[in-house]
Amino acid sequence: MTCESLLAKLRPKLESVGHCVIAGGAVRDLTIHRKPKDWDVFVLGQPNSSAMLSAIGDLYEFEESSDSSDPSPGHSTLSIDLEGEKVQLISSPCNTLMELLDTFDWNICLFGFDTGLVLHEKCWKGGGADLKLHTVTYPLSTLRRGFRFCDRYNLLMDKEDIRRLCSYVMANIILQEEEVAEIEEFELT
Image (cartoon, rainbow, N blue to C red; front, top):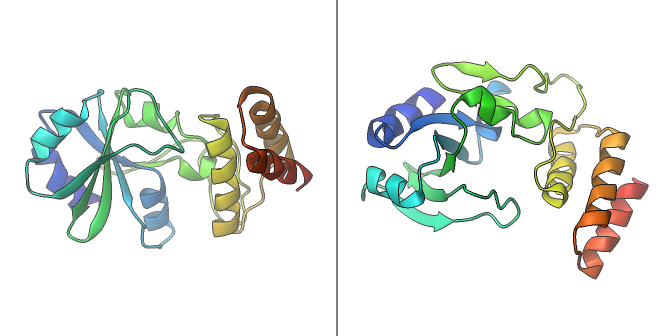
């Protein structure tokens, strides 16, 4: 599946609800010639899940979900299976793709597709470039995602970014004992 073919299937169904764009990992993975594990399709303009569900009708297998690791307030998500591909339909209060990309945490996520490829000016350039923090969304989730990206793409994370996230998490989030140990291990890395 391509970004163009996915949007060609979804946009006619969702045009009455909001403008659809693809952003994040799927676009990045296609750019570096990897098969995406899933697709994040954002419906701009803050539609609710019932409006999205009504728009897509009964054409797709779906389940309403919320990702507890990234509990974005005001966002609703529908998971659908489209021709064997896992697609997340995510409502967003943003009005443009660039506005949406600006809310993403790491430079490796700053890839989007609307009518063509859109790269945020601070996006990861590949070829040995390091992982850089763009903005903090949910600190513990952001920190964990950062380490997963480092492992998956053989990247280095800026030590100041690690310290900043670990400090914020330790000072502001009630953690379980095993999470405290995990953060202390991150700080030593």
